[in-house]
Length: 77
Image 1: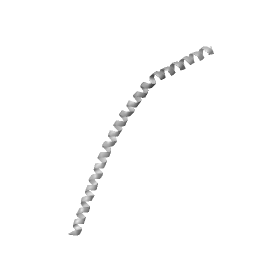
Image 2: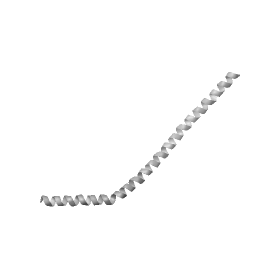
Image 3: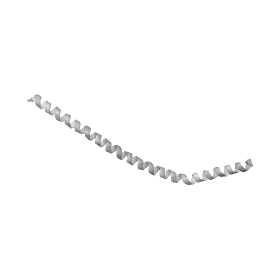
């Protein structure tokens, strides 16, 4: 009886191994495509957020630059 169980287990293991061998390229391909899509979405979102933050910083720098020029002009007058 144990020989039958061992034989059944071996067949089951062999079948799993073969199934994994057959499906692994498909799984790898899907994984790669999904990873690329996620990477692109994350990159786009990060780019949008950075652009928004940088525009705020650029405006602040422009305001400071304008104030420094005004102070220099007032000092000369």
